[in-house]
Length: 254
Image (cartoon, rainbow, N blue to C red; front, side):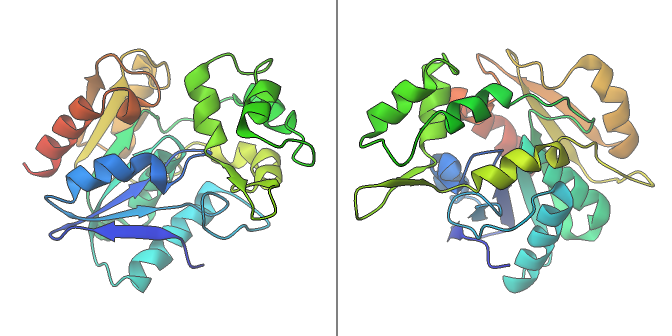
């Protein structure tokens, strides 16, 4: 697997893993800031962005993709930031390959199994008839009955790519992501605790990490700590990037 990525900066290695239906572009601005202190890699996960589309999609596969990527880039050890789906990948990677991880930052996701929660998103995306739309505005209008939040619609529309002949296609592998959605909601599996420094960051307006999730997290990562990003929901790095940056950089440079 040859994942699409961008590299910048010098220093200790920092790898950033985006969330479900996201891409490395969501992290470009923060990567620019982090690259002042680190060698930064932002990566498109399989079936996302410009990385290859595959027949299946799971946390386990993305963990192995990351392992292969580090070998391809001759990275022996790295700090890893993972948001949402990327956070699940980062946690499972740390469990499977702890010697490859320096410090871990998990953005707004717990280690538990989640209930299916994106059906409205899939309905919105499938409401767009790619054979008929001629503008991005038409695509957004088709989504409107299913997704009322403007910011969410704009986030999803970043996956829409205009071809040279004027038609549109999805950058992400929509059908596989829909079919295999339950594979990314599974809990992190582990046999023993991992003593890596881990910072969990939650948006203060988000409900993805609850108080009752903390016991399981600390069983897996006894050195974990939890902090909040103010004025932020699930996309905490986009809602309050300056506070997110400050808290991450303080943790990674301790």
